[in-house]
Length: 245
Image 1: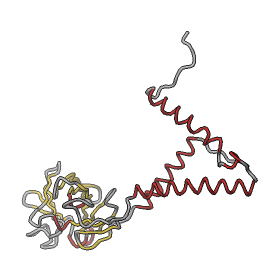
Image 2: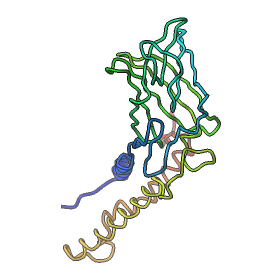
Image 3: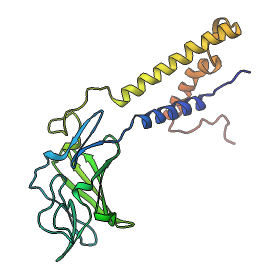
Image 4: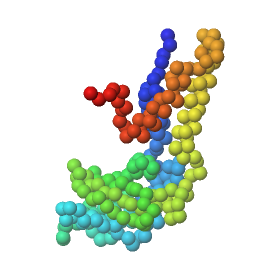
């Protein structure tokens, strides 16, 4: 039985393949200490944020949040006297919403790296999304309270960037994810053609163009590409083949 694959099915298959390969290439940033983690691509090192810099933000409810990624906040915060990384303040009242030593890193710096700080007993937690921003040493943004005593923030810093001056540690010299995906794509394409031609030749005795897997599709591909370009240049409008009455 001959299985045919049309133009749309082929590119859906390639898109799904690349998406799966992209997911398999992502990895969690492995914790080194309380403010740095490492992947095969390099190190995110927040030690370089100035020690005396207390990152502060005020949310839409008027609460002030203070954060220090590598050193505990000085003074007291709520019931905790030391070891607090994230503190919520409201006038004379303060609440510990994340301890420094509890931090857990998760995600990939290339997509969504987070640092999760919890309080003793896990009653409250602060989730900080760390983003590469080559224009700042440290900026605290997007503070809001989520469900179940969870507080969400973003930390923008150049020390989360790989391979730049002032970046977060020594980058790995391994090839990029995009390069790996391209290599795998052409490898699979080569296997598809070479393996298919050998199978059709020796298993079915194919000759000439009959040896090309899905020859009808590949011979029609230039026409599909031409039609796609024409359709795009026409503003994604179909050409009417009927005269107006």
